[in-house]
Length: 259
Ligand code: CAA
Image (cartoon, rainbow, N blue to C red):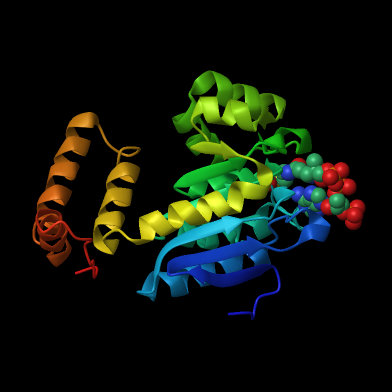
């Protein structure tokens, strides 16, 4: 799994795939090729039963400084309209297994939007989150205006997007962007530990749980509760549900198969 130029991909522990953004010379700016590599890896991982959970990281110093501004400079409205990037974002958005973003350092613009595509963000204490697109005379273009406001509410989303100011890891934790903060040298280790815990669960229950939570963004409470009930009933028909309950009764660890 080493045929990539802008990322590295490793199976580090059972059930977990680690994607590391690897353009340190450009602060991991998300040029189109990098995004296409993430989308391709996730497309393979979707079909791979050995992958239960994915971690995306940028390393200890920087997560990603956003879209590649030098690449963006080459675009006009028509070329952007034909751009392949929305297709790659869609692949990331539609990936059905859990994604953890392990974020150290700058997490900006499209980089922040990538982190918000993840299901859980573990932040190093040196993380800085921002949507600085306004400084370039543009706005976030990969879901930032929509995901941020749903996560942190109107006032903070407006402040970040209208001013371009960054927020710290502490503020991100308080605002519900990050699930946890660690020392930067522990961010990946903590993400791997969490991924290992998740990877032991029923793959089918994980997918259903992820979808049920993401559905909450799309629906009314009543509709969401109805969706949850249907998903709950669906899981009652799975072997993993029987195995999970049997293992509890027999005081042993469950052996989930995803069936
Ligand atoms: N695109 C392309 N190259 C970038 C980049 C980016 N987003 N961010 C950094 N780089 C490059 C710099 O041009 C520089 O390259 P050279 O050595 O060739 O000059 C190199 O990375 C190092 O950058 P700095 O010297 O600026 O590093 P720093 O540590 O002093 O600062 C930073 C880091 C705060 C992230 C700063 O580089 C910065 O502000 N970057 C731009 C952030 C930004 O505006 N992001 C939003 C992009 S637009 C977007 O994301 C829209 C979207 O998704 C739709």
